[in-house]
Image (cartoon, rainbow, N blue to C red; front, side, top):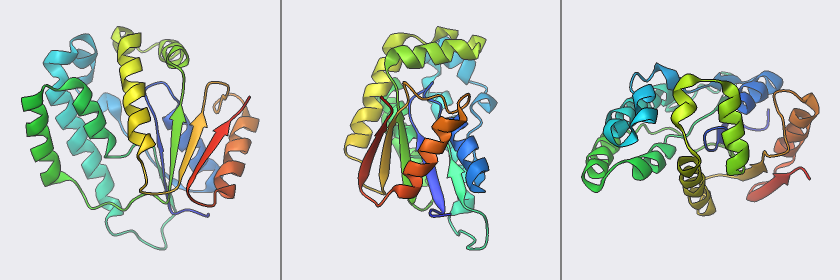
Length: 209
């Protein structure tokens, strides 16, 4: 495999877990997946974001930091890893949902627990229009996600756009997923694998017309 560590990121509903899982299967890699619904505060957060933002954020921080510990000293003989989260996105969510005092507390804790995980060899950023993201969230049929509204998804998508506009830690493949179905259309995954293997560094775009 060309890369040892790939991260797939993007807003809720973009399909990052599906892409990470299927890429891992196709490329013979280990899938490192976040377990969002292990967070006991998440259902309450979607119903009352202001009240439950801080405990939700801190749970995710500790969970993700623990998952990334295995990458601090990578085993050169182990299989490559494809993850569906980056620890840096925790601050992105936190800035959206926490007030200033809570965010300062969160950043203090973040700086203490942040693992020294390597930067990914490739970052895949999945974009999607707010309408597409909303449709996919509703299609999943998760009752706890019913409280997610378009305004939150819009603000989240805009935050991701700003973050990746300045991203320079690793090669970046930006994928517009509006017309791609990586779960139901095998040919779409084939196209993505081709683009991943053809990456030469820098920043590239994949947009199926």
